[in-house]
Length: 251
Image 1 (cartoon, one colour):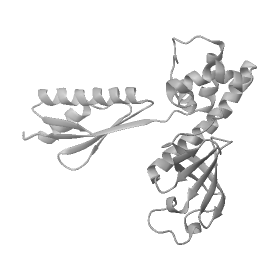
Image 2: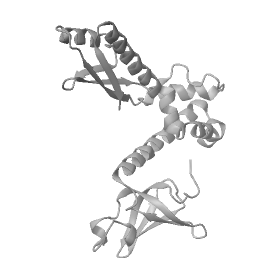
Image 3: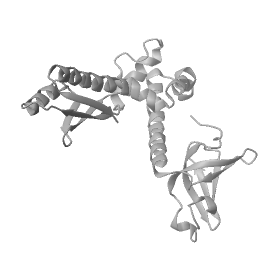
Image 4: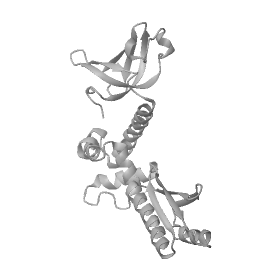
């Protein structure tokens, strides 16, 4: 759904439309009525001799809002104040929202309602709850009983579209298990103890004595955290019974 104008400090997805010697003019993808400008001093750190070495027409990137002119409806942007990690995350989020808006159109068609009505009835509330609409679709696609406290005809249509079109991202949690035994059959005891931690979704790999790498993978953070915790506890319990010293350190 269209937004009016970003705030200072926001990271925004932009497409460069015109590059001049003193800066670049940009279209803000999420703010159709707003134009942005990157001064040459905000293009890159250090002295910029040729601006086109750093930015070009048609380039899509992420900038930080450093100033707003409400009267003219434009904003001042900085390219150099956004690092590579922030850029990747923001582009991924933007692409997710692009997909979410298309999915909402499908929900609207199933309900025989305009998209604007869908936003008013439930989508805005979902954004407030999840942060983004795509995050709501992700959650709906992975949960067997999604938002049980919520009632409404839209819910079934939303879940159906989510499960048919969205693959929930898998969460990975890791840590190191340091384990050793001074008994003559110590290696056998360690193997036996580590075997108690075997579980679907959990991998245990040798990382060089006395360390073993444990990784749990699951559909969401809560379930994955519990999966790893259970596996670790079984190993620690077995260690005590077998005179094996074990200590787990979470990443």
